[in-house]
Structure formats: structure tokens, C-alpha cells
Amino acid sequence: MIAFAEKVFAYSKGLDQQEFVANSLVYDATLRNLELIGEAATHIPDDVRSANPQVPWRLIIATRNRLIHGYLGIDDDTVWSFIQDDLPALLKSLRGMRENLSSPGP
Image (cartoon, rainbow, N blue to C red; front, side, top):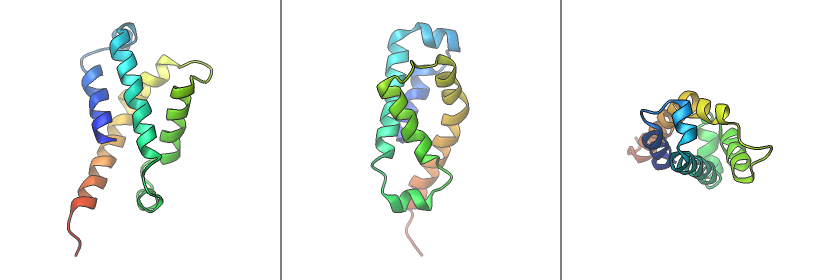
């Protein structure tokens, strides 16, 4: 999930929303990686999800489903808002989880 989020940031770096939407390669690659974040979330064990309630697991998975199936089209404003506002916090949480999982126990 971290790698996919980092790709989203790399692809959209330095772009404003209009440039992002106009660049079909960047747009499509970004959507694909957002989908992969949601797909990966479905494979996180329940005990890990329960131990990390700060991560909106259901919302991430629901977003993946909306993107994959294109329910009612994909709203560019919502995608851009997610990248700018929600993804940074998600990435921070995921990195924190990784640190906690890789740290030796007491």
C-alpha cells in the first residue's frame, strides 16, 4: 500500500488538478495505483486492521470498488481531493504501522 501511495505522489507531483486530469497517462496510472491501494487493503489481516483503527479500511476498500467499477463515473474533484487531502494522512499511518510491525517486541 505504501509503494502504491508513493507512486501516486510521484505521478501527480508538481501538477495542479487541471494538468492532472488533462494528462491521461498520469491520470490512468494514478487511478490504477489508488485501486491497488484498495485491493491491498482487502488482504490486510483482520487483527492488523483492528489494531489500526486510525486507517479507514472500509472507506479505502469502498473507494477501490467505485474506481474499479466506475459507479456513476469517476468524479475528478473527489479523486484530486483524495490525493491532496486524504492520501498524505493515510501514508503517514501506513508508515507508522510498518514501523510498529517491524520493531522488535518488548
